[in-house]
Amino acid sequence: MKRMFCALFVLAGFAVTAPAVNAGVLDDVKNRGVLHCGVTQGLPGFSSPDDKGNWTGLDVDLCRAIAAAIFDDPNKIKYTPLTAKDRFTALQSGEIDVLSRNTTWTLSRDTSLGLNFAGINYYDGQGFMIRKDKKVASALELSGASICTQTGTTSELNVADYFRARNMKYEIVSFTTADETLKAYESGRCDTFTTDVSQLYAMRLKLGNPSDHTVLPEVISKEPLGPVVRHGDDQWFDVVKWVLFAMLNAEEMNITQKNIDEAVKSPNPEVKRLLGSEGNFGEQLGLTRDWVVRIVRHVGNYGESYDRNVGIGSKLGIERGLNRLWNKGGIQYAPPIR
Image 1 (tube, rainbow, N blue to C red):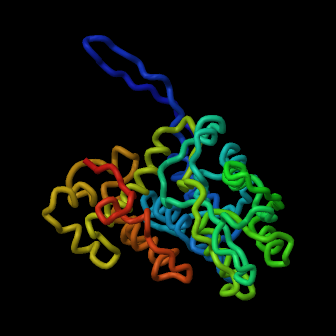
Image 2: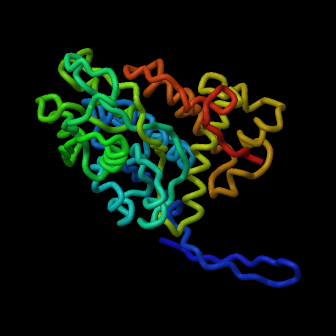
């Protein structure tokens, strides 16, 4: 049941009443006993089910971390597979609590859909995959090409910008789902397949002969991917973004699944604040003091999640690149917990 509240502030001797805010998603999730998470219909490395229906991936791990922080159990999740076209409607309607589905943060999506992006869990960019036997080494050689892509994504607009800016001709062949798009590409209905580079590496694994295909070097757009929540619930917005920030801060402090039990004994004040032995930061979110301990123990820090799902410990083998921490040559950066 959603509750309404207002806060009273005293500023320069005057009482100021803040607008009433709906703050019910966290309570709903707690009362329901399960988190409703929107994911892809199957994208290796990000959100994909195995033959037993167990979901894994970088986006899945973010949902698992949210569930761990709330329930101390990363498995209390109902996953809803969504197409790119349907993903925002499912969130707007309340069918899901959070969308964690390789979704690009753009101004129009942030302002016109009644949604909030809660951070960036993967910095990406759009690229092209093509058969090696076509002897194409650069996207600049694609003038006149037919291009397979998925409807409801930013890919079509990015292709239009890239090709028109270079006076290159092209033909878009679009499909509803990623798998339909891949099948069309594999059957020869188009010359090249375009989407985010990370997705190209993931989809290439689904081809009959992955080694027959290559990802071209050009990256033609900025694709900051991250979790999304509905407008109007600042508490839930805070929970989702700070779960992501906690995973990043844990990696920065070298707190891992293996050493979490030792880390909770650390005298380091930053570590003490992160892990809840100092301050009441978890309670400020509506969670428990040990909310980050729960996340790291069950899911790991950001780097652990990255490596096993899309990085060196995975089939995709994607270099960290921009997704390295800010102090390791990348741009992943989380505000401090203090």
